[in-house]
Amino acid sequence: MTADDPAPGPSRDPAPPRGAISRLNEARLAPEHSSARLGALLSAFEELAALLPDEGRRAGEDTRPGAAGALAELEALLAGPGGEAGAAALREYLEPILERLIEALLDHPERRLAVYGSLLPGENNHHHVATLVGRWTEGTVEGTLHDRGWAARQGYPGFIPGSSGGRVAVKVLESLALPDVWDRLDAFEGEAYRRILAPVEMQEVETGAVSGTAGSGTAGSGTVWRVCNIYELTNLARPARAKDREPDSA
Image (cartoon, rainbow, N blue to C red):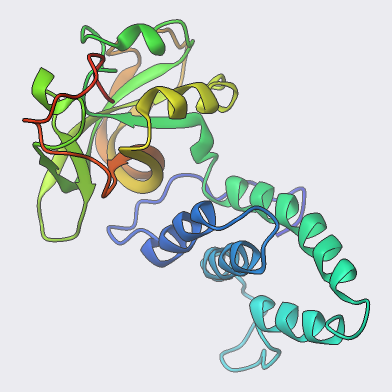
């Protein structure tokens, strides 16, 4: 893939790259510039890059070690006396490059938020995203809702991803402004909710003018997979009977 090649765009495959998405969620939990974080990013990048068409490669032709293996070999060389500073500098240099490449391969998931609770248009906490210029699209995500978390007693159960066949209806906000407000939204959700990436099956929407209202855009004739941010319950989320805080969750 070169700088002139178009981004792959949304996936129409009924089996999204779940392995890569899982690695990216692992990377989010790892310390910044750590070997664990960089290794997870490299594994995700390899899986996504393998999905790109490569007509010039024949089966079994490439026997070189993968990117993660190559990094391990390089870090081993740097592990000698005084080499740790070099390994740390290498991780710090590569991490943002990989993140930008992965963003492009997944068609910029940092610009999408799948909402299932009080951030929805018309609900209690929609004001947290109401000023973001963007487009709302209907969708579903694999998982289940549970009566836990500080918002559950307000009627907003929390989301847990899964592959057991259950699906949760969501609305996806696509906005160029989302990357600038993630820190604020993460702080609002608190420690009982964690922002992860998940594949969402969305209605196709014709491109055109966008606005900050629900239902913007024209629905197409099919559906499309997009990787989106969504807030999941963590093991710190308490049952709804607990005296939780007053605001409601996404």
